[in-house]
Length: 546
Image 1 (cartoon, rainbow, N blue to C red):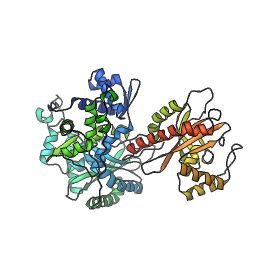
Image 2: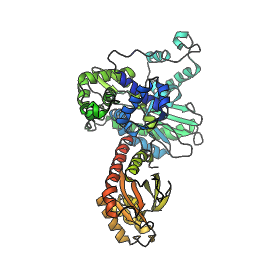
Image 3: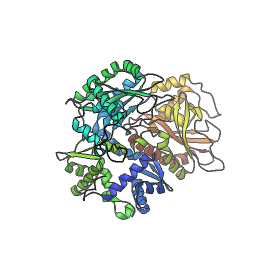
Image 4: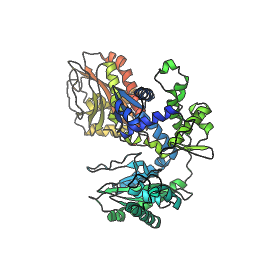
């Protein structure tokens, strides 16, 4: 039975976390009624929790549906940044994946199994579906055997009495039942890993999947994570995978351990004081349904991050703007639930933080992020909005929110247009280095699509330079007669233009001046909102552009 919560535990924080866990277990979205059933909360309580999480940007509400929002990744990012392994070792894992043409994972030990903190997958018909934050049993993974290789007798005994159930409901230790064959086999695999320095998963997690894992040691000698190379039996057997990857895998691990030995200057990132609004706003402004103690408790998690892996109570209070007593109660609650660990008056996040929506959100695509913001834009301007990426010398539509109008622009996802003649295409071309713009235009057949289409290469280059400087493109009847379109870039955290966002309309709807006055400001604001979510979601996980 779970231990009773401490007297100082914050009940609303516990309820909010229960809702986030239930949403994660449901794949990221569920109905409020189902949420009530899965959490055991009263409907009114679930409504208040959902409303608070929505106000924080952590979920989205649509009717009775609750859906996790990319902003929730702030919590997982706090743990991953504090851990520092994805940032330091991730590039080496990606290089290994490219060299082997196989999927590569980084995992850390959690109380109940291994939890992934980095994934580099290959695009194949049969591709892996592991996600950052996924938890897998120790005994059925190669990484689990790597970690178990260092367990003491006490660790094995604790595992034996910690929830493996016998036939009659008691633990193995309580019922006198000996170890299962699977557990005996796991001990043998752990012993082999201790001797060989690597471990294998021969279709233990799922038929068809094989994996090889090697431990990564910190300078003090303890294992901090495991690197796994995962393949399919259509490509390798467990034996052939080991022969093919172990030499280069060991070289990569040596490079990772060298990276961890290197003194890398780390400037502690600014702790996001997400509570500024929640603590200074009046209850009337926040609304009667807003649960301040839930917002405060979750924001305590964001006190941690790069350069701040462990913090004393005073530092947590300072980073969040909370009173020490309030921060202390939140930390006590989070520690009781397993999201925080403490020792020597220092607190640190645990891998369990990744269970708060990270697996469901770590495969979020750019269209997933963009569409809710685009829908709000369409409600404001009453014209259709689209998102597109550069695909060769064309643009390809990846998301669209249409307005209901008798005469509207009818375009479907997947539609392609020549980049040179489209507003989104000019934004995307303008985001390229100047030399690449010239190369692309030189190889493109610049055909007049209407009597207004600009086809002179020198003039187009001049227009692209202006688009880059001004940050928008207005194309008037160059792609199609009667069609006017205004587009702006969507940039990732590095400043690279990864997509373009536009509003398109019939020329009778607005003049060009009216477009710039009425549409450009909300269009830019929408792009900024998309970018904000993209930067959070893409900090440690790759966000596919389609």
